[in-house]
Image (cartoon, rainbow, N blue to C red; front, side):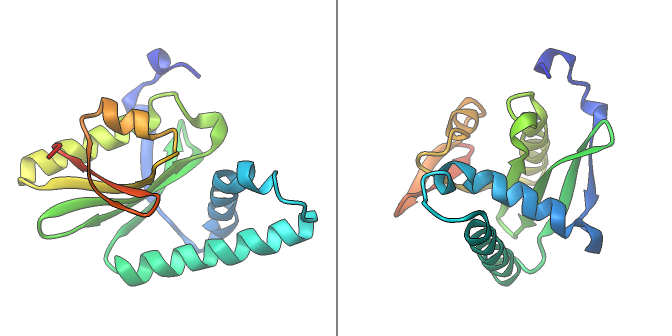
Length: 163
C-alpha cells in the first residue's frame, strides 16, 4: 500500500470493544515477534509470555491513564491497528500507536499523529510519547517535528513541539 493512494477519509477510529481482545493481542504480538524469534522457546511458551506481557501492558495503561481513549484503527473498514490517547491538562499523551506490520509505512500512523498535533495546537498543549530508542518509528516522529525531552533507560520521551 503506498502513501500516495491513501485517502484520509478511509482512516477511521472506533472504540475498543469486548470482542477486540484477540485482535489487540495480535497487534501486541507483532511488536514482540523479532525478539521472540531469538528465544529458544516452544510456540506455547512464546504464547504464554506474549499473553502475560500483553495483560501487564494493558493493566499499566489503565492504571497510569484511566481516562485515555482506546481505539481500533480502521483503514477502508479493516482493523489495522490501535491508538490509545490520554488527553491531560497540559498535554496530549500518545499512550500507544501500533499498526500491524503489513500496514506500516503507508501513511496511516502519520495521518493520525498529525490529527493529534492539530488538536494539540488548537488547545495550546504539547504532545508526548514514549518510544524505545531502537524503535524504527523514531524516524517518523523525527520527521513530524518531535524531539527527545527525557530518557528513562531505553525509553525516550519525545515531545512536540520540540523543546
